[in-house]
Amino acid sequence: MLNPIHLRTLQECVRTGSFAEAGRVLGYTASAVSQQMVLLERAIGASLFERSARSARSTGLAIRLAERSRDALGALDALEREVHAMVVGDEGSLRLASFATANARVLPDVLAAVVAQRPNAEVQLDEGEPDEVLDGVLDGVVDAAVVFEYDLDPRQWPVELCVTELMAEPLRLALPDSHPLAGSPEVDLRELSDEAWICTRQDTAGARSLVRLAAAAGFVPRIIFRSNDYAVIRDLVARGLGVAVLPAMALGDDHVRFSRIAGWQPHRRVRTLHRKQNTNPLLPIALEYLARSCAALAESWHAGERRQPIRAEAP
Image (cartoon, rainbow, N blue to C red; front, side, top):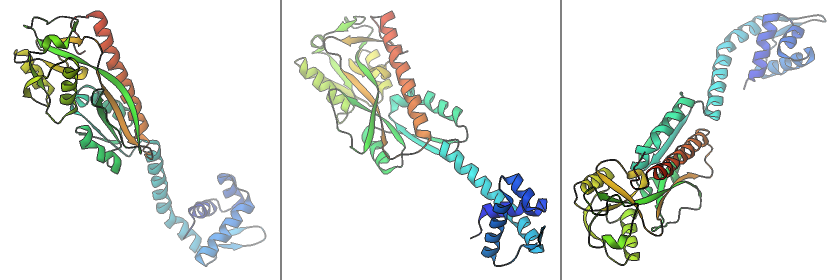
């Protein structure tokens, strides 16, 4: 196989007509240039220069080889630039996955920031519950997933994954404007033991957490409506059809009042998962923006509660 370094040196030798001048341009000694040309001649099995005591004249073969190698070396230079761009993350691809509320509240800013910093990179986003995106991370199809875990429904993540907590979402009671307790800074769950409840599907962590919260307060919640769409749950609450417990990212300003749960404050933990062996240079950039975005969102909740303790609306 022809050595591209030797071919570049050949081009300078042909262009300048001198080993010494070619060496000066390339940063080699004349002796080093001569040695490279000897190795190139051995590789092709033919002489490239007519040597004398004072000069080395290029043969026709040398001239043709220098010309023909120009395109090949140009393509190799382009490939090296592309590889470097992929290594540092200027190009390449990044695939993330997340759950619906994080996709609505966190990921748009993160994706925009990554694309702005690396405009030539391909960035993709999938949506799914933690169990739906976990295999993609383990298989390497997804670079990182944003998942959640409820305090009252803890789980174990695979040991081969890096697990990083981004923020702790407080859980809040959602009450219709017409409810007697609407506007209270805190509400004891026992005061809602006779209410109709609205929550996510029965097989979800949110539903299991509600049942366990109610059990700690001494009752079994009477669940009459279920939906995994928090906008639907808020709408049902707003219409006075029941009450609900929602994570902070699911709150909204739609004729629903939000109160803290009296006593112990439960949370939904938002975390990132990625493989320890993942070397995608775009991944640290995305993780940094995820951490920043979640920190800013969590601070906005605290600031909102300090300003308006009775109604903790989403920013």
